[in-house]
Image 1: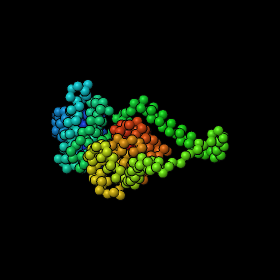
Image 2 (image 1 turned 90 degrees about the vertical axis):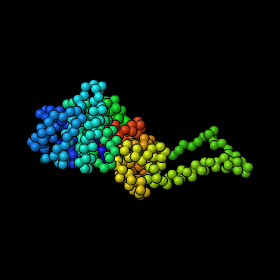
Image 3 (image 1 turned 60 degrees about the vertical axis):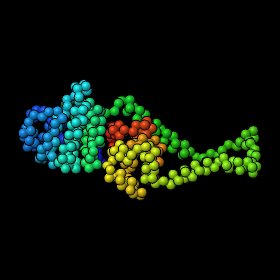
Length: 343
């Protein structure tokens, strides 16, 4: 997968390159920078002093010393004032510059903290959107694994109203399941006898001419039935590709919005019998903005289902029902309820 979002201390993450947020002054240290320096040893601090003063959006590369990485990329992000002083473009430039350096150093993986969102005050919800957009728009994303490391729960913040709505949705589904179990558990009762005044009306038999006319009128329905039967025999791959065409999307749009890499999508397209993981199919469904019925149908073609007893599946169902298709928002809800996130 080109982008993986995890919650961890970035100093503990294994990657070819670790991005270290830094201040302009090498003697000013704090936040994630301090955690990285502590793990890497005094050699990294000395290397940063040798670099000297840095300006906003500048990046510099040093060895990683005792980190689980080959390189450390020192990146000076913008201080957030009010959003009207070029902060967004500067933050986007930081990600662009870092990704370009990762390519220049032949890295296969790079780990970012959420740049500028700590002591520099960039709003976390905006910072994560910018990070995701810049990472997924990177031209060589398919050749590079990018890990976005979140340190606290605030990075995936959801509103109180949204959480109450999710809680209500899950509660309603639990009540409905209990009612269905109660209903089906009751012993069957014989149907009451119908009174004579509710007798079925007599049915007249059509003439041969009427039969022919009726057959002609119903022929289009037969054609529709044929199409339905053909679609019922669709494989997962066939249905996926049909849905992409129906949505007027390209393969690249779909797999990038689903946050899966090109090689995996190529495997799906080239192998009719290949069934990806359930979370991959869900991510593809969100990327194409399928309805819940369409998503469940796509899952069934690969032998999966949304289970009413799974907390994760209930939250996924909620997102489809509320037409929440952005994976960041979907994952923020899964994260809030301590459920495994989608790609």
